[in-house]
Amino acid sequence: MTTLDAAEFLGAEATLGTVETGKKADLVLLAGNPLHDTTNLHRITGVVRGGRHYSEADLDRLKHNVATVSPAH
Image (cartoon, rainbow, N blue to C red; front, side, top):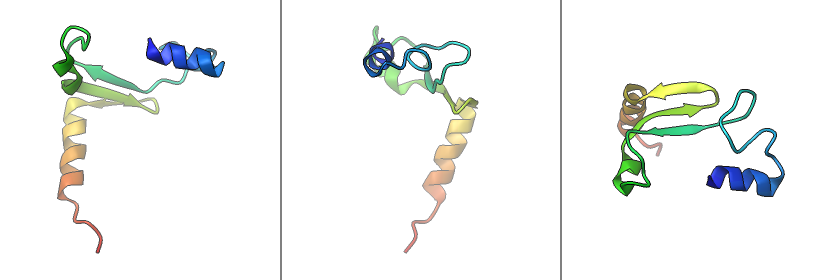
């Protein structure tokens, strides 16, 4: 709902604010409803970013790759 409110405030409801064909949407997919239990915010099962779906396994690989990269000196 906060996404829709922000889109309305920006006057961008035609392209943002809801998940519909033709609209821009990046999504975080959760294993449970965060309104029922806020710990569900940490139970991420997938992400849709730039039209690409990243599964939980994809996200785990990305986290592992970032954790193993040595910082530049």
